[in-house]
Length: 406
Picture 1 (cartoon, rainbow, N blue to C red):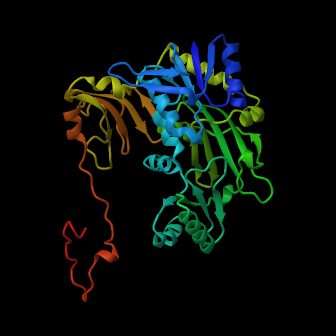
Picture 2 (tube, rainbow, N blue to C red):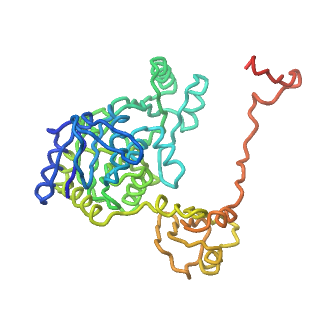
Picture 3 (spheres, rainbow, N blue to C red):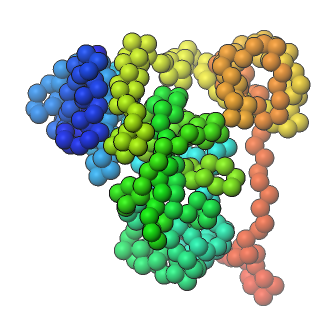
């Protein structure tokens, strides 16, 4: 296998270990500075130049994209994808995970634990948002912060309000997050490769420091995760679209709470702590993908006109509850069930005699029109009318403004 590591630092521990592991396994390995690429675009021939020379063919790429070059770095990864070179982490996955707000938005759609989080810009929304996440103390995070920088614990509402106002005055975007008191000063880092947690460690802050990052003096200890925590870590990485990821979790009274999913997790801390060859595991995984690549079914099966992939939900009260997949009539409608999702359980190629239950989700391939007819109409959530939208007895109804006034 000819493997390229995209990294701006050839001497850092992670890059050195990955190169060493690849060489030990007989692979050809090159470390390419991400900033030295040029992206050439023309019809039918996406291409890359490195140090002004046309790039030779590679079998796979392992992106190690730093936070400061996310935009250009993901553009380079995206170009490799267009050239049909296997990328261990996709450009979309890197972009999703790099933005703290975006990653929380994506995770919030799924049944996976995350700390209650809010994002506001209007000063008048600050106090209500703090109350919605449980009141003080709260965690305030800069969207662009890394390694614990820009993470602040505010003990009171007044302090939180002052910090947010100060940061917003300097054009900083901040998240307000529920403080999980029982996990103060510690968190868990699970290292995910493919669909497995290959190593895990607990990070514990020292002294009065509440941030457990190793860069802030936190100490580490190996930990054996329960199935619940392993499943949460793997699902979080998959939701983000990452094959190699470091998933940071809080140990709350209600189970794992995903804090962050890292697309370029460092190896030094976790390899030193666990004494495991994680670099070798990553290289082996990439080699296996090159030999037997996974196919993105959504991209490959939608080429037939009128056919595609969709997810069908089985809500409470559905006529399909209690029926088997065979009795559901899906096959008669030219719809094939590829995967059944039941809670945290994933059942590939479910048997035709599998009985459907409330909350099941079926990933199906078939006629789009047939599947569209099976999707129930969305029901709007009942919301209380907003006070400012209700005219009082002494108020006149608002007058519609003209386009010029708007």
